[in-house]
Image (cartoon, rainbow, N blue to C red; front, side, top):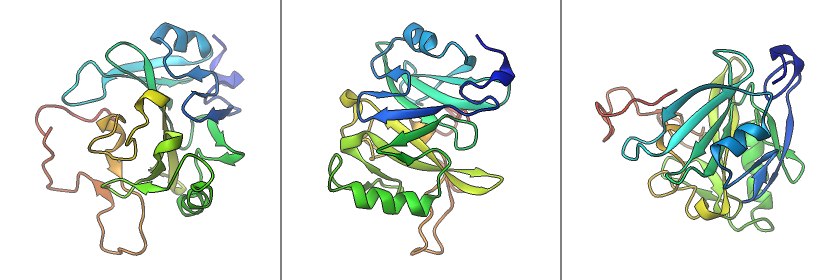
Length: 214
């Protein structure tokens, strides 16, 4: 394990990870066990583990970083212990690239246009989930936004082949519930739209049973 200031997933120099749709992201291959994923990122510290789903306690999330209280990457494992989903922190996470485009920390409007442009040639059409997050099921890719000191920036969420079906659908897809909580994708066409979910006063079905980990 390298010292905290030597680089790694969120050290002084951010890593650049190439996404191969449905197969891998950087050193992480979908279907890896927890031990295999840990070995693939020997420079990363495991900051904590948490229950990623309110109704499926067997879905485990692992938060990684190179310093305490500075998470950079989230890994999600299914009930069989296989890696099925990865999300990168918009500020400290590895810069995930797809077809030469930088996803992590990108401008939401620019990346939404890029998704539209590539949707015909890469993995099928652009889709929007019930809460308007854009993505392409055929790439196993959903773009979320994260509130940062520089405003809303993109937090890419990527899944493997076995979990890509309807991944853009936050009701029926495989992406864990915790990844849908928080800032909503900005839509200038609907100026009065809520900016976060759950909204103030809203009671989701898991209220009182489970708390989002971040």
